[in-house]
Image (cartoon, rainbow, N blue to C red; front, top):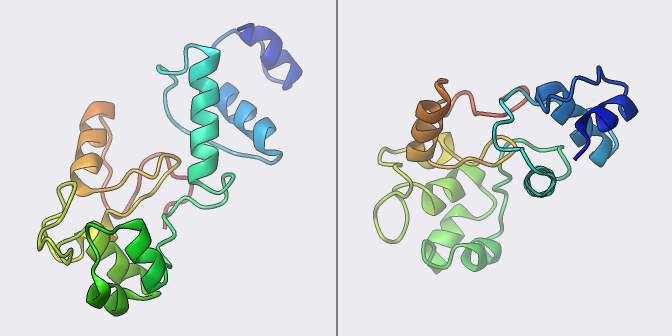
Length: 165
């Protein structure tokens, strides 16, 4: 991959480094509007990895328009999406209520009676719902991300998320 050529075509300083500015410019070009990322690019060392990341994050975020998981599911959609966690009664209880859906899908209200992905307290399903370009989900995954990248992330501030709210 000729990074300098790509950088030059995108109007960047052609230094050959595939860093956050270059990656943001490539992602912006791919989706046709400005996209900004603030993270290291250690894993984007081949064109395939970069393409996979842009494709996956573009899909997860609705072409970089949503950085918080959309949990506005009907009862039928919730049953279809998470059949191991919902039954008819839970699906009706959570119908079109994103916080309740998160508590059943990820939190302690699941029909198994326990949370997933490290979610153990009431409200954890909603607090640690999918966020960021990768839709990181679950208290344990937030903690692992924080440890790996030496940055704090909690249910209040999601990783790789422009303007988390």
